[in-house]
Image 1 (tube, rainbow, N blue to C red):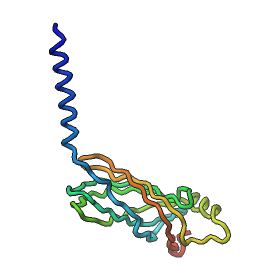
Image 2: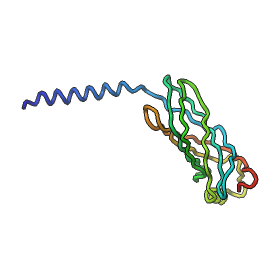
Image 3: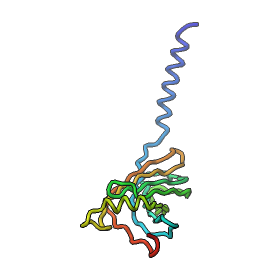
Image 4: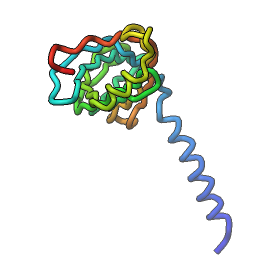
Length: 159
């Protein structure tokens, strides 16, 4: 069996693979920012919040999603986590607000309270948000946001 057909086949596969890369458009990452945190009713020893995220699509194509998961770290420690099976589309060059319920366990709240200094309050706390937006043609998109926030006071009886 001559080597030329194998070389031709390998060269053809390489050219085909490189051409396939050109079919995937260059996409800018989504801009995802925390725009609000509101208290929700909790059960027993847990505290719940609704985290509102603004999702901005800077691309010229729609982005479909099918679920979101996030972790919220405050003062460098995990405070809350949440998931949602919401589905939707962020149309080209547009934005939307997505609300994700998150849960704070009693232990996470205690860990945060122990970490606060005497002079520190619930205002202007440093936060980091890590999450993923699932689904769509290009799979899961991970996101990160950081800044400072003021935590809302829970409804009476939630602590």
